[in-house]
Length: 476
View 1 (cartoon, rainbow, N blue to C red):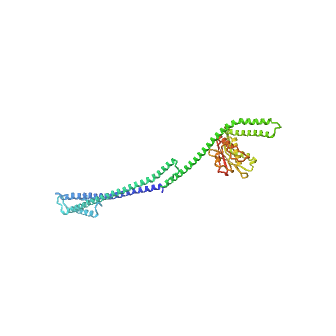
View 2: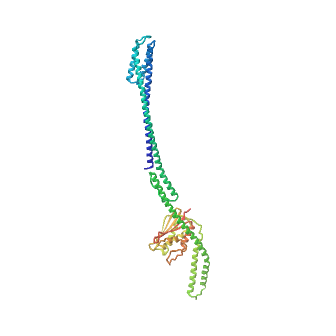
View 3: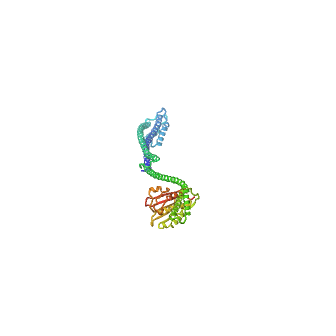
């Protein structure tokens, strides 16, 4: 059941309770109002009876005076008859007819009366009859009024008891509904509060129980889903922090090794130059009668000295600051130029090189990016098998810039080698025909970092290929 439906039902119950209390009060007030109307009718009847008695007694007293005057007797009788006619319905029809008959009988008897002469008892006797009837009516009316008062008192007591009991029940019901509603709302809110406190403390594993009204169940489910999303986000952030920390440590290590190698290379360049120079002088000074073995030994010394010098120059390039000449460059075009270049290499003609992706611009040094891309592509070609080998140069975009991925289906890289792949002098090449110095990826890594980008390596494992991704800033 939803919270809205529950609130509607509880409100309906409270309204029903109020209606019952109001109904009981209205019924009691209706009964009291009927008693009041009956009492007022009885009081009006009593008042009219007293007024009639007053007029009839005036007529009787005028007839019994020492000097009776028929007109003084007629006037009160006429007023009584008129009042009786005007107040039709106050008394019963039978009562009204009898009183009127007696009054008219007395009135007609006065036609023969002489002024100053005593009026006979027969003339006056109807007035006594009327007085007796009205007196009896007054007694009956007074008794009726008393009965109405007693009945009204009983009704009043019943109404007060009924309204009091009903009001007490309604109040108890309202309190119970209020407590019920308070608990139904506050308990889920307290659970949500505790859940938020746990979430704020970093505990995402504890799930809220989805109980209560439908709105709270939905809210608990949304909260649990949010906690799961936050837990996933935290895990992803932790993974990214670990990855960035490893990359930072690797970059620091590369920088340290690079500067150290540059210093060492600078120190040994002079001896190498002297060795190479002396070997050149010795070769030039040799005469024709010198045996071929000695000449060949000097040539080996000279060639190896130059080879060592080439290695030291590559070491120096690790720590040498790059060029600041940067401009918007089309990465798709750079990838196509590299692909067309390596396709002409005879030792890699039986391997496929493709360029994929849309034209993307980046703010970088085109020559240096092409140098890195060429190194990565040649490494990939050397890692894939002949005939079925395939290298893909994939140009794309990321949230922070542009990317070029060099992906191959070659022998792949294991986890240990993947963590050391950018270290200087580390190489996994076992082919004696193409020996590696272990400096190409280190130099490429340093170039891309100097350009404000990042070079990363990824591989599912041995035999599953590898991917080297260059990330560069967007074109400004």
